Image (cartoon, rainbow, N blue to C red; front, side, top):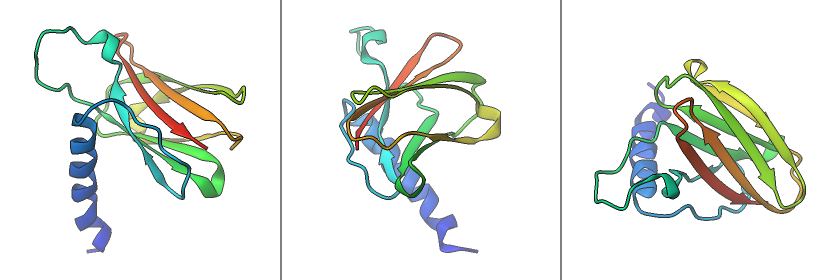
Length: 130
């Protein structure tokens, strides 16, 4: 068994703990740098409640100027929208039954916002900087 089989659960646990810790933070571009994705806070009522399930994970792939987006469970087809302060604008549909998708981006310097919109209307957001 490869060592990656042992590290993947630890990566998922670390990502989950990071996701539960607060607001999205900017991530600088590095080879396969994870992008923190959180549910849009404006959609969550002020009443205390348990953290919601986040089925998405993403990372920047510097060698291909792409964003790799995946889902830990099949939640249907979602709209993925990426915008940047450099004027870039990308929209694709992602069928989560496929597990993952690679979204090419320009790699232009700027701040980027990754928005995932589920069929229920729930939004997930990630931010990164190149």
